[in-house]
Length: 180
View 1 (tube, rainbow, N blue to C red):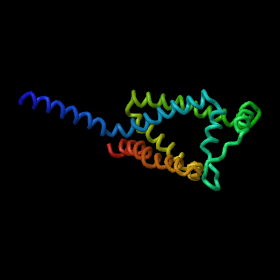
View 2: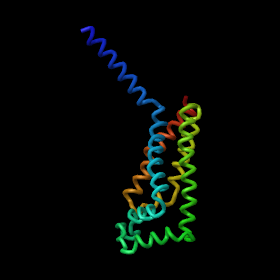
View 3: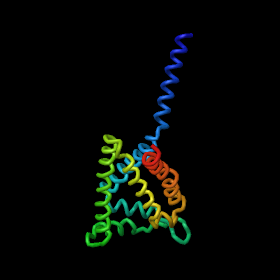
View 4: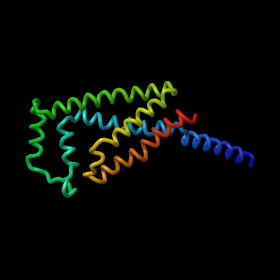
């Protein structure tokens, strides 16, 4: 009976501490940041190592007919056309891709660095949260987010920003800045 009480007390205390840690305000900071780091590792490596050809093929696969909202039919020469664009280094798409990869590479360096700094210096976490909240707000103003050609995918992106990123990053930043 005493052993059972002791074990029960230890288990409940551990559970309470664990739930307290899980439900901590710090979860609002680390959860979306972990998601962003995983997305960055996946998408950046795909873009960097698979290149422009992969990106164009993927965009074509996920494109829809603007009038009907149905997936576009595959053209038999589509792969050859994409390869021709990729191989033609004077085509503007290559310059745009290069510029996009420079920006993405900067983000790919800065986000892990900012995560490290936030881990080692907790006082800087609110400023990173404000910056990520601003980034999410900028994403909401981007015109492709509001077009909803591929309604399910576009709607889910917008709803993820509104109901996941803004409450977590923004909530953490507001709490740490104004209420703590």
